[in-house]
Image 1 (spheres, rainbow, N blue to C red):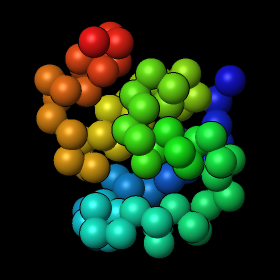
Image 2 (cartoon, rainbow, N blue to C red):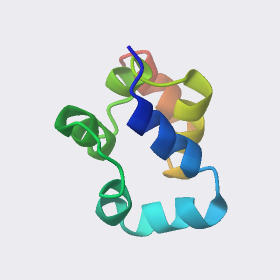
Image 3 (cartoon, rainbow, N blue to C red):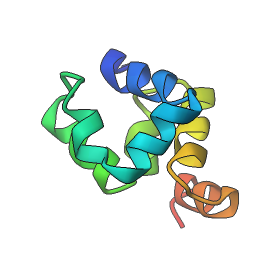
Length: 81
């Protein structure tokens, strides 16, 4: 099942200014979106597998890139390692 608001957040973070603001203060940015508590927690915990089940793969990968996670780490977490 897709989560519209997580996907919307990840889409919006494609804008460089939004991504920089998110890296500086995740809480402030996330408050603008009516995220379910479990989704909010997954974002804060960088829970790649949980979020992968709920968002578009391209948005997810871009989100973790924008959040500062290296590709190798993203793939390792995605595979559950």
